[in-house]
Amino acid sequence: MSDARMRGTAPIPHSAASSSSAGTSPAASSAPLLQVQDLHVRFGDKEVVRGVGFDIAAGEKLALVGESGSGKTITALSILRLAGDAHITGRALMDGQDLLALSEREMRGVRGGDIAMVFQEPMTALNPLMAVGDQVAEVLQLKQALSRAQARQAAVELLASTGIPEPARRADAFPHQLSGGQRQRAMIAMALASRPRLLLADEPTTALDVTLRGQILDLLSDLQRQTGMAVLLITHDLHLVRKFADRVAVMEHGVLVESGAVSDVFRSPQHAYTQRLIGSVPRRDVLEPEASATAVPAAQARALRVAYATPLPGIRGWFRRGEFVAVKGADFSIAPARTLGVVGESGSGKSTLAQALLGLLPYQGDLRIAGQGWQLPAQRNTPANQALRRQVQVVFQDPFSSLSPRLTVEEIVGEGLRVHEPGLPPADRRARVESALEDVGLTDAQFPGLLARYPHEFSGGQRQRLAIARALILSPRLLVLDEPTSALDVTIQQQVLALLQRLQKERSLSYLLITHDVAVIRAMAHDVIVMKDGEVLESGPVQAVLDAPRHPYTQRLVSAAGLEGVG
Image 1: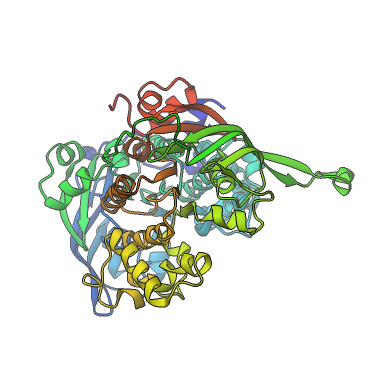
Image 2: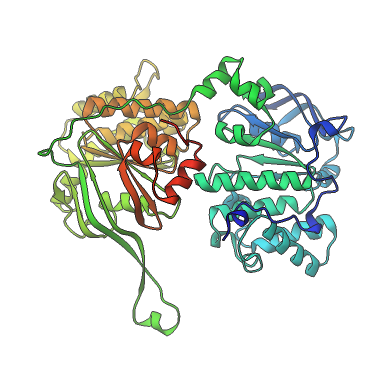
């Protein structure tokens, strides 16, 4: 598939074209398309949006930026009156009509009509029981009164306009049969079906890999130019804002603290919060340990191969099984106190590699932890395998789902001790738990009754610190970090990365860092391997690979991350 097709530069079909002229300039309209004035949103006694006001001109791209809890998504949902039981005051003027004063019946004409919305996670926003083409056609039949046959044809054209390959065939696919990028393209096609004048895009790229993020952003830019619609982009990704938006508005704790042209705000941010956001980039602060020919690697693999059994079609499937090879002959070594970064898109095999390293999947080849190999099958809980599990621990991507909501902090962090040191006296176990928590910056002085608290009582960054404490309590030699910061806001991400860097220095820890974020790799890793479709395409010292990538795929990853030429 060509790059142009991947970016979705095919023309918008007539059925989805806007009545606005293509490439409408914000200055071409004498009045704003949308004016939000003194918006307040309250849930019970808690006010989450306080006096927010902004304008969007026809054809303009405005980014609403802030961290989780800043009120940016609630602001967008309130404009469409989709904020549940919220009490909303203020005005949202479009064509002289106050959207906040319209009846529910009148608002149903606005939603999916003049204003459409693309949600953050397409897998939860799409109906899992309907083919994606039927979901797009449903909007066309409802909003444009097309016949079923006309709606089907227009839906295929819309899917084609977003760059989905084989749109006629993909129209019959269910959401789970599409990739993340294809699902998001289907969501955009559904939004465009109503020919909106304003598109609200709520974190449309957060769940996507770095190259797919660029493709979706390019797609939105192309479609915006062709249709003349305005776009309100809701995001916490400042790199996307710099690349996409005309103007930016920054929110903190429900208040709009700064707004202006993107170039002006990024060049000279006025508010302290904006300055902190722009300054919250991953910073490299790692030691370069001296190489030792006698040191035993924390982990080492030669010709590592991991395959999954798959059913074969037809009568062949009665007698034998096929296989899907997820990791194809990977070689790597992690020295003490060093970090090996594994970078690649979803489906590249990086998480499968980590599961094999943790002894959770069967594998072929030679794989050793601190010089010792797993007793195959590695999933068996033999004494040798259990001893090896102490040496390698894991920190998962989403701390909220990886921490049991029914266990207290003391039970969560001390869980490994109950398994590996069952004879340890309760007082000694509690002292070890408190020490591990202190190492990650959580103390009873900060959080009274810390040990008796539950995960929901902590922020995302604090929960990730709990997960790190749980992994550290057994004093492992190697930590597997599976996207440890991708679920966190930029300022919290910076804090967690600084914590991991400090712990590596103090404990001579080795890390296997899995991520699709090239900026995190640059900040944390000593060495890096680049994976695609189960193969290691490129490997070496991190600066050599990222500053002068040889493989075209690595070049695309670095380019998409906006790190070209960064030393």
